[in-house]
Image 1 (cartoon, helix red, strand yellow):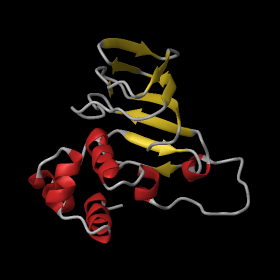
Image 2 (cartoon, rainbow, N blue to C red; image 1 turned 120 degrees about the vertical axis):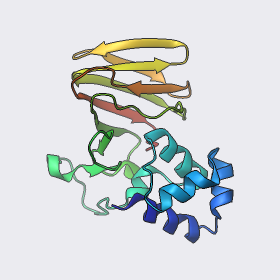
Image 3 (cartoon, rainbow, N blue to C red; image 1 turned 90 degrees about the horizontal axis):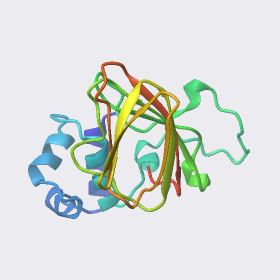
Length: 183
């Protein structure tokens, strides 16, 4: 998916100028321009800020979610929905099922060595929990910073400012859950 073109399409459909979106999201007009022309890739935190300012969820932004009326209970690995740009050194967020139809969102997260959710802290309604299934991750929640290893977990009120950062040399994988769905 071309994130820049998709952002521009949704922004113009909603009648927002780059300047207005930048103001709402707390970013610069130049940053919006760079993203829309694919000259830079937004961090997870920046993309979340932009989508919150529109407002639209990551699931809606990335769109290709099944809209079946028939309930689905089993999902194969290739049926997960890629919520972030999937590239070298980038955080990968893959969603299980259609979060718009549930009160729980389950993600398979991958953080390559040195990757993080961005310099801006995330904060949103709800709760988050996760278990590290591979590698290690530095988690900051409010003033607390902790290094979690494979098998460790976390659970916190996601209204608290938080950030994930892989300070290790190996990729980190996390299976996480958020309620209500926000990405």
